[in-house]
Image 1 (tube, helix red, strand yellow):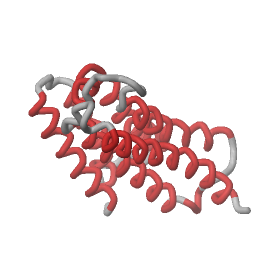
Image 2 (cartoon, rainbow, N blue to C red; image 1 turned 30 degrees about the vertical axis):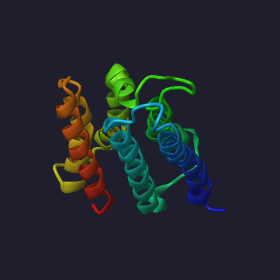
Image 3 (cartoon, rainbow, N blue to C red; image 1 turned 180 degrees about the vertical axis):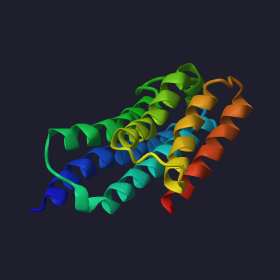
Length: 178
């Protein structure tokens, strides 16, 4: 097994956990749709987490040549994946909750948006530390991906957050093809 295969397996488990949590969340939304209002923000946030997970997986796949096994590699991968794993669970209220998913989002939106910004934030720090943070398309995409959730924290209205999450979803979809 190569170093890349060894580390990629660990990373895939972390990212797979986030994707599985989103899938379970979508199933729970469907199952409980008559008892609890789903709203707009929770499904948008779940879709963003799912696409962000795909982005991370594809980006890591493209960097296979420079992968080395070691504690820093694992710490870095956990820093990238853990905010999405956390968010994939935190975006849904616990079992038996009667809070609407929309209300749950607005009660905890700052924490959720900070978690959404954490992964690209760590990437920007990593690139800056390596001296590879340049004003080129991949880094500009990443900077906007980092800034957008932080900018949404300023807006408290439902419409602004819904539109912001739609824009962010489109942005992470664009990122799949960068």
